[in-house]
Length: 151
Image (tube, rainbow, N blue to C red; front, side, top):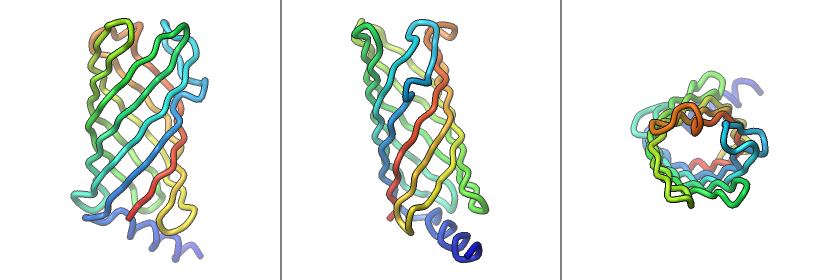
């Protein structure tokens, strides 16, 4: 069974594979000094340029209290360790908050790709979004859980 699982996961990370994903971000566990608790949604699309290396784009929405929402768009990449399903990601994203505040952030993440079947995965990840405009107050640490479709 382990051999079948290893072969199936390796096939998903080959060059030419496409990816679509959706995540619930923060889940009430993210924290920065301005927004104590908040949650969000993220849509992701990607393409494996080489084996184990995916180029991805993302579109996100975050809701915070009180009425402090933001929208973000980003570009980045992921590296998958095909032996165990762990991935590392990094990139850059532009964020616009409803309070007319714009920010550039550097998101980094570490996660695990757990396959439900050959195409669908559950992907929990820890992330850190480093703000370039206000490092101490706008940088965020959090947890996200997503679903991915590899085809």
